[in-house]
Amino acid sequence: MSFSAAAATARRLVEPVLTVVFPSACACCGRLLAQPTRGPLCRSCWRALPRHRGPACLCGLPRPPGRPTCGRCRRGRQPFAAGVSLGPYEGSLRAVIHELKYRGRRRVAGRLAEALLEDEPTRNLVASSDVLVPVPLHPRRLRERGFNQAALIARELGRRTGRPCGDRALVRRKDTAPQAGLSAAARRRNVDAAFAVRRRGLVAGHVVTLVDDVFTTGATAYACARALRDAGADEVRLLSAARVV
Image (cartoon, rainbow, N blue to C red):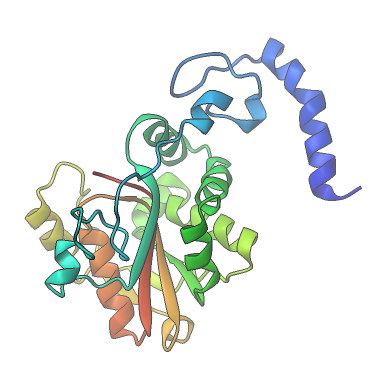
């Protein structure tokens, strides 16, 4: 019996016990979980993860109906050659990212990777990339949190697709203030020159996909893209679990 089959069998045996001895509720709707080991969402909320609808530009951002590209690409200000994300940062997707990021539910990264790879554009983007590079945390924040959620997602994507994960290629050299609550202009100033490539051999001459949990205004992702391009990356793409609409 393979390891995955054995793990699945163990889950089936343990699940009924856990639901009685250690009942837990769905992080989104509050219903008791029938499969606690597959949490933190119930089956209905996993199935209801919000997905992007409507026309999208090649870079992954929404585009106006009838337009082939988004405004940023039309103005030549888009550093990403391609981009994808699962869905808008709301509902059950927001809840599950919070469970990963703020409650340390690290197994969520694997479920997010599974959900992302259900979409053909995401599978194609990852499969044609040379390396996956997560958005890094500053060492101080990494010590406080104990993990980098973007790196966990990147590793799970790499494990499922065979793509290498360069989780030390890009570093955050400035301990910037949290981006939450800042205006778009303040976010750009906050992360200006905050990132650097320490392992140029992993990115120079390669197609690099930058991986993050949430794309908000893009300030952090754009700063990372500039550092990767300055280090000689042939092409930089973006993959985020969610995007603020």
